[in-house]
Image (cartoon, rainbow, N blue to C red; front, side, top):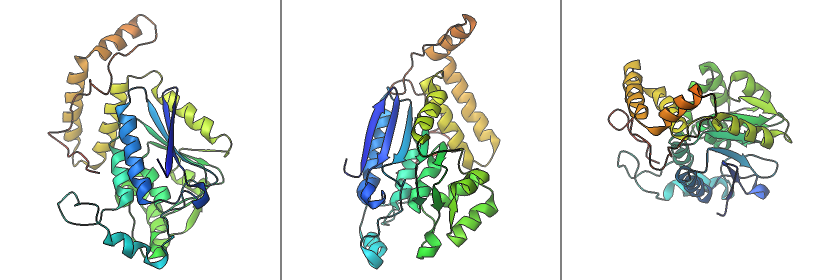
Length: 288
């Protein structure tokens, strides 16, 4: 890894954007390494949750603009394969990362330790929780650069905050405080910069300590994928498949027995080999 780092301790993976001298500005290298990192955390049954944060004083200052005014014309001239419809189109790198995060089997907590603008804030929209340092500042600055929203933020942001607040932030491109983000519901909790890493770790443990890993993974996918369906009948069908599939697996027997015996459950099923397919006949799989 050149532009990120990753550590795993006590079931929690910490992925760190690691270009502190560049305020962790986003690059194609970082894009590919983030996708690889989430592939790794999904494949590792020892990982229960993922924390995404930044090294140094920033979370991410947005796209690396070191090429100057030609940054995006040079970027769009590069090929990175066809899009989901088979068109030969330079795909948005932040969008590829967000689609990979959307499909994660493990809960994701973004610990926004400092400035987060452009892709630096939009990449966090696919996290399950956003914690922020109380002095962090954020901005969806695309219109001020002549660009448009990216990283699937035109789909995600209006689902996370009231529409008019999303439009305010997007149209104006203004920088806003962590307190405003918290007030709008974009941020789950505010903490001091010093306390943020420990609070993110504590939240990760609280989400996963007593729950079955396979059930957490399926629940995450169910909640996220239901955001765009046209009718609750789709959710009913997926949930019915899930209840039938999980009801026949060892985790449920253990969970019920532990409850009746008033002890902690020790769930035997693992994401690597016990994940039932709830979605293939109803919802498309994201392609990152």
